Image (cartoon, rainbow, N blue to C red; front, side, top):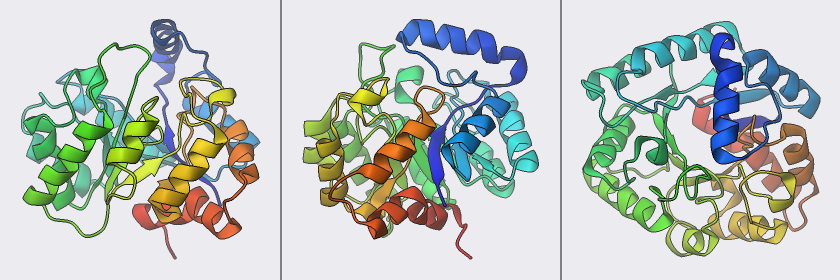
Length: 278
């Protein structure tokens, strides 16, 4: 079984213009058309069984619209699991998080760059602590985003956030996920501040020769997996911005990672986090 823990889709009526706008701003090429059908076709070609869809709330007040679309995904596509989204300037955040929990959502996605809010901002710390209290997961964009000059979630601030959340809502098992190998284009700081900590790292945008964003090598990825622990690594692609099939093939071919470790990365860890173990 293979689960992609990091994908994006947009409603059909806005997918084309959204993809064009995002691609132009970030100067990147997409590998699907950004629609649900585009993702499902990509998954079939790649041999991926399930994908986690991550919405991005770019401004306050989008919660109802984005949640409605995310819920429709969960209600109608068993191959997909959509998270919810929160903006740090939303009102009634506790009520919104409770709504997500009560309606079967497994977690939320946050994007510090798109909200122009540092990950160690008190608002994010409180949101993440409250989310954990409700038993929900949190995944964040981490590291450099090609559309922004300021990095709002560098590893050092991510580590500070983890420590503060631990004070507010103590946890034994990790529930927080740093995307993009822990911090896109900030590998040395990822290894200094995050590797070995109680958090998950997804490997989206982690292979420099497979397309968009990353400057990491296969050897870098293997080193992070080994030092952080394969039990805290999640297979992820950031589709449509990376090719799901190419990512599956690359992880299968990684040297120095055992089949047991690859099984954990491809689905075992995700199944445990998402409550899919039978």
